Image (tube, each protein chain N blue to C red):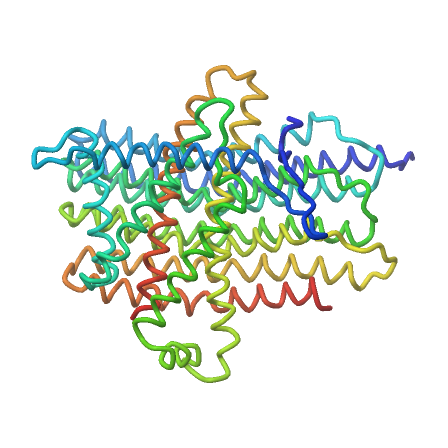
Length: 324
Length: 225
């Protein structure tokens, strides 16, 4: 059995491509299913606006699909591109690119489904503001895609930067850690962003006169929910570009891998939690417009406290990279 | 595909250090500044009670952002002070993000230095406003909440704000331009790229410019209160 570098690089490309598309397909399908389900119940409630609801559903599903399309692009590149086969580091590059994009697409797909569903139900309640709702839904789901765009950036940097001159042992761990940090870190924040956008669409259907203020606060809530995905991106950039010294010892390599795992997992919870905060804040604003300022402040403080565990994760990851 | 991640740099040795200029970013930033200056001059020229077309656009921006800043800061005096900053920040970012639509031009925001610089600017302005509004003692005591030993984490949290605001913009714009480049390469620039430019350049670009601006206002208002 031949086990030269070339074989292993090809193996890694196939496995990476498989993981990218397989895992990347989970989220988009769930999100699209949710939007279609909501569209059905919306049409049964208000059959007259079936056409408009159907259109909103299709547009929303197309946005939810884009995360899976990113994964498809990465998978195709992994399967059909010719990669240099002069070093074992390439194995880590290809595996990590696949894992990063696959994991990164889960959350965005599911998250984008929430606003689409809420917009469909909203149109059935308030057929007059269909256009406004669709715009808000588009904005909300586009912001949900941010984390999956981050993981795609990391995958592309992995694929198109030349790491082959770097020493195998620490680099291997750093690259896999970078992929895990950006990929895992995307799951929670995009789910949370989806929850906020859902509340935004529901709120506009409830209070069409305050749609601009609701869209603004929705954007704010989504942006803050996605902060931990940005931390994941930051840690993975540091892991990619720090330039590790050559050492045969296994402990420094393990520290780099652990930094990626630490940041990746630490980003999941705060993303979802901050999403809950934003969701209820937007909902409350749509119900009681007199207390907007207090709600915004409470939302921001609550999200900051929720985020503190994500900051612990980032601190430990930075300690693992630079101190240990 | 080879141009991915390549930056044209001018490296000038100065006092024993290497000073690096990212030429493309500087040129593109100046293009944005020129367009904005032109727009501002045209909007403010021959002001009238019955406004001309460009004056209407200018007034629209100022009224919108003036309202936003006033809502966030809850204070007329301060809102008047910070509206020009917030308004020009948004216009600069929006135009920067749109610039990539034109072939051969690039978004200055695609270079991490631009968002990071604006993030640091916002950070200092927010903290200056905080010190000015609360006084230095209350400002420093704010870090010791809820307990004194939480201070290091509060400081890290403040610094993390700069990281998160700038990397969010950078990642989105960089990601959009990579997708456009790769898809153009895969489809030989047929059919798809214009739609992607519309989505990632104009739509996502505007949203992210707005998010950056909103977060800057919010950081100021959190410090002030």
